[in-house]
Amino acid sequence: MIENLLRPEVLLSNVIVCLVTVLITRWVLKRKPKPERPAEVVQSPKQTADGTVILETSLATLQSYKNNLNKFGYVYFQETTPIVIEQLKAEASSLIVSETNQPIHELLQKNYEKLAAFQQKEVADTKKLELDVLNHVNKTIITWRNLLKESR
Image 1 (cartoon, rainbow, N blue to C red):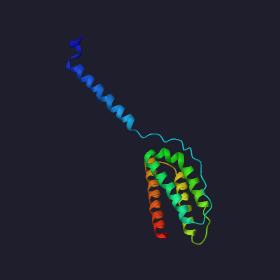
Image 2: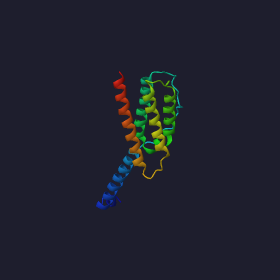
Image 3: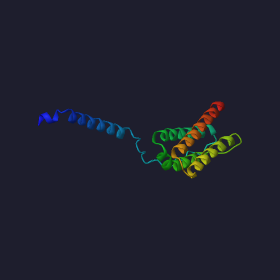
Image 4: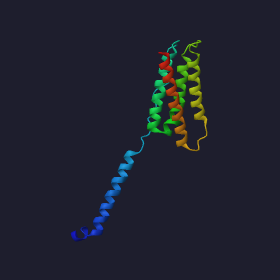
């Protein structure tokens, strides 16, 4: 019986089975994790006339959204974009609009309107839509950072 286990064919088949098992296990462990259900509810900041504070808050929201979108992909976009849009709307509505804050208010509105347009868009290629949203968010983050630098 031991002679049968030491034959080259049996040894080769055992090595192949072990190799396939290791590769499948690695593949399963490397898959993207599913996003957790967002437990947070939209938080409305206090009313303020300071546009830079609202812009910084919205910038933090966008950076978190971008990081999670990179990490979880299209599934995250589908499930949490409406919540992010509502959060950005709440942040924009907490800004008391004046002549100095009008450009910031318009930037905030354009951003969540664009995200809402992405949400309404028909999806043919999920990866392309994900990249389009990431591109928009990255451009917005850069624009807002430059605006914050200029205002200081």
